[in-house]
Image 1 (cartoon, helix red, strand yellow):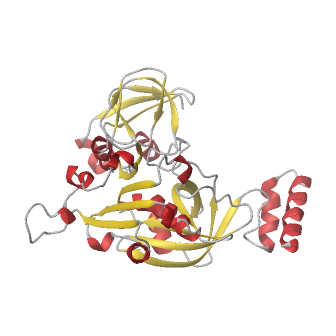
Image 2 (tube, rainbow, N blue to C red):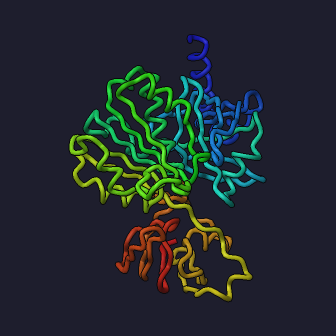
Image 3 (tube, helix red, strand yellow):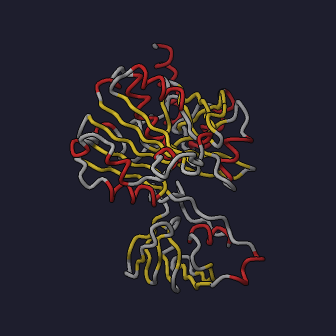
Length: 368
């Protein structure tokens, strides 16, 4: 412990005596690629598939890592073909030096595809500061209902894993309801079933929305989230409900859980791919004015503004691309936009706009 503390102190002293932190980090990483004067870095030491479309990467982190609270999200930075990309993921802390990064392989996703298939053991990632309000401190009851769909399972698993590691899982009455398209897409089945056998206070139900039922239409194992699932929860009025998944799933959960003691939702949306030149004749184009850079261009109506701008080689600041982190938010000076997932429109001027999950519906001006 003394040796590690001395090493950390030496890094701080070195970085404070050199004006250019980038130069400092360059020389430090010639000695050890994990070292940095200011940046949280990690090295991939293992990877395995945990579901049909999800992989788990075990990562060794340096001493700059801020693990945050279980259930929060971290900006994750990767370099692919010399270009640095940022995405957001919910991490699971395994011990004082290692985390698990659970990644859903999104069809056509550049970063998720790289992490799941192309990254090598020994490759390095960087991490930003954690954010988000999903943590045990925000739940107002020890009776927890977790409604999750798809990759929404990752923050829920992070919370449950932390409770189990701290020997506190049995202190909560927990009912996890977990939806995926098919049974093969459910992750963490083994630990969930082990916890259910070990703790009388933990229950888990798995649902497959595309399963073919051989029984009647009341077979809830193959149904999407509906009132029947909420009615099966005992004393929901005394429960804290956390829902995480696609925006439509979370909106349905909120509408069904009005009697819950507390409801907290976290939804995400994945930006659509860029529209190719061959498609351009079939879509309506919208004029967009970027006031700060004094640029005029046209983008497709209905497409994520962020994706459309990137297709024109304009690279606005962004993070998660799912409407969670707000890094892409910029002032909308004028014009009408629509949220791609929930279809809510915004006609007000001088409003902050998350361009990763909104599309242009009329000519617009952005302060970019």
